Length: 601
Image 1 (cartoon, rainbow, N blue to C red):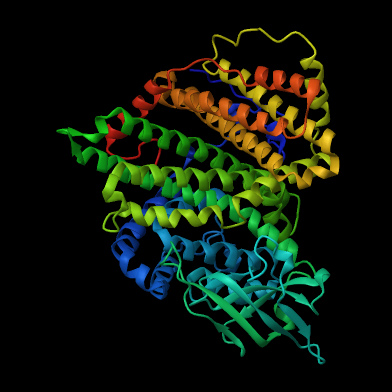
Image 2: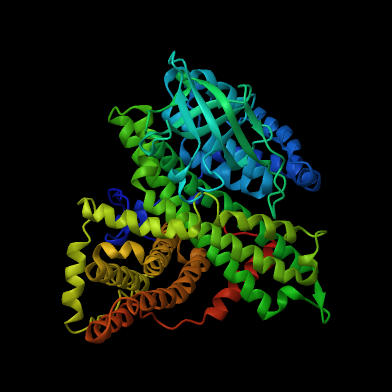
């Protein structure tokens, strides 16, 4: 077992695509400390004892969710991330993430709590004045006040800046009068504090945030929406009819509401990934237990190859996404600490981390939500006809999972945002894509590299494949930029193909580094299952990168140019053959023996 250490190198946002990381550089969830473990166990008990027995009741009446938000407040779960000087526990993002993952078990209730602690409370933490923080945060930390976030309108969803809600300053300059409506507002049925975005005087350049209290005259809410899923989460329209908001309740700066909205969404995307992975683990655990109990042809269905394939793949995807999630969590944490140590304001250091890693946050949102959808779909399938019955748990999980590909910006929007942000970083000189791009062009015209990976490195093959996968992305993205220039933003299909390549690369590298760290900490024999899981993921991911890259290339290149680029893509996406059947069976056998999810919980 290697004990070598190096100075930790922190990647800048988006740099994972052009730089290599070492296993010493990454944070893995197995590094959890005693205090975090205790918080996590307390949260598990809260979900099992308070939420699980009431799921049907809460689905019928989401207003009863108030009782559980209150209980979460009593346990300190609502104030984990609120600074101590404002009545919270002042925990960092890592500690918050360990708890968020378990709250992800809680179906619609997790949405209610997440909306309160995240998009409802964070705008005040990040952008509030000292007076606003002192007034609202202590009560938000205990649950005495509940929060909601009002951005979406009937005709402006992804286009948030297309909002019509209007704010007009009164003649005495003491109030802003709000008129308009918001929809799909989580916690609207019982929230006391609403973060509302409106355009001052209807001016597009004056998109501004406000803190609006429920008791203000003219504020009203509609009936509960009849939703497909997350039925235990209160979701209503909110109406503003000449609502007078004191000028001191303007949030941040006039005309800077877009900055607040987008920054809150950045961190919200990370947190969503973290929560849905908790849901993935729980759904997988339910599927494993069912497969161990259900018999067909006098055999537990867990012994059938088709079922083992499903269980193995569900676990591998969940574990790889989790690796990326906690890795990015640590990067955000480091950036916040760095900014705080440099004397930056609370607003600057708390928002700086998510802003720096906005690319990674967007990718994680897509990755996590699509892993959850895959897992619950397969878990339902394992249950067969019972999975389709509301008397069994998977029907609810299936319905509730679907919203996550829409929340926090649709997955389509996030795919395009990730590439857009990457290219903007490059244009601003923050990220050097030009140098590796030119090197790849030279490499395409030279003799291919036939060198063998380091035979003594358990991940020698994967490290070479990862380097090549990054080259494949730069080949595709760089070629698209050169060919289409400013027209690339209109080629959404190409952007989404490129983003799919990025998602797999982030997951591949994160999982490999996590497994390598485990090997160095515990030895290869004890960590072999993780080594095999990574290799299995690489085997499939390299094929996916090839398909996505090919689909993008044929959309903008032709003739000899296309032929050369396709040859390069093929060269860069080669990977050794692997008996993935055996790997998935081994993973499934471990799950079956443990009768639940067992790859760190």
